[in-house]
Picture 1: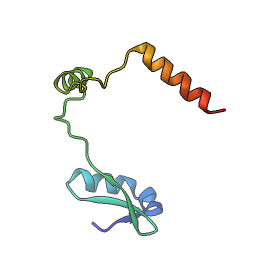
Picture 2: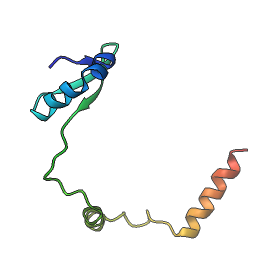
Picture 3: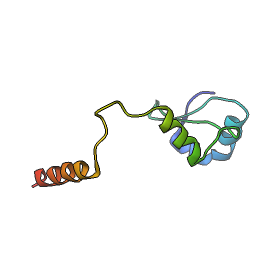
Length: 84
């Protein structure tokens, strides 16, 4: 499917959603420049907090990359002081 401009997309949203769910590539453009793609949600995907926790356990931060709450508070305070 050719890219659809924003105004046409607004007016044809239900048609574009139907096209995307049937497997068509739906792209919305602004002044001819592609901006976004409409894609269907994968119902088979796991969308839970447990999945995120499992991913975090499987991909830990590198040594030295973690900071204590006190270190984070100190960094935030330094950043805020630099705003003035």
